[in-house]
Image (cartoon, rainbow, N blue to C red; front, side, top):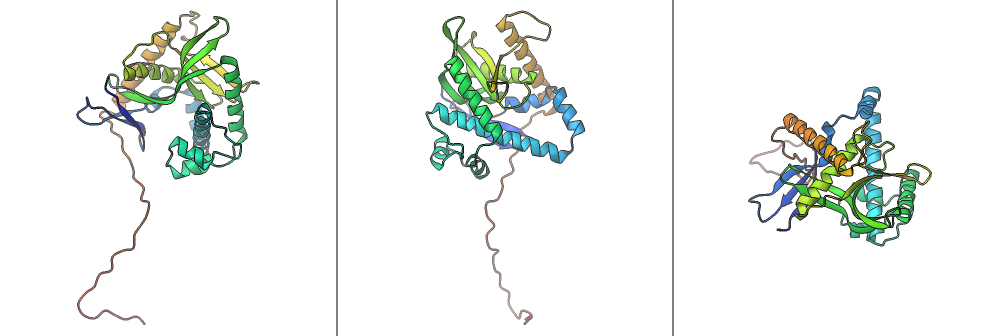
Length: 287
């Protein structure tokens, strides 16, 4: 298998990924799972949009995105063996993460909010309960076959106290107050892309959503579930249902945005002095 280089691209049309591989004649550009899932129904979010003004929506979305990113980055650092202070991420830790976005760096260096602290306590409690063995975190994966990419938060093994053994999981961290059905589709899309990226099948890999900052223990951990009303405990059936829903959503996305490509707006970092020109003859003097 030829190794791929995967790069996240922030665009005006959502998250995209650039994939370079020596098998490809030119770079491949794929929309993220989350960009595709913007087409998946979310009744709670739709109602919020209808009953809340734009400024409030934008404020809450930006705040949630910043806090979610900060929690993700701190979890990544802690998995690396780093201790993170409540006063914020240090310059040395920023370097470890390889970040360059100035606004993001500025926010990461600010003191943690109460919501962020609660989420990080949830990680500790989850770690104590399931004794995770990390294979990879913040791992970029893609599917050329189905035309999408994404970043899986965590892949590794969790201890099952009842079965007395470790099992392979792929997990997405969330700090949202509610767990939406779309999260199941997101997790399943990462699983399928993980298999294609690494050229191996993991049919028994389990898929979970770790909601941080919830409940008395500051976390809620749920596995991808079956359709409402389906009491079957067949995990593979649940994954198949979620995967089929993701593919249907991808069809809708492709229909709405045919031949969609990433559109980036490059912001200017500086504005140089304008050139000074000269002309023959006299120039009016205003002094």
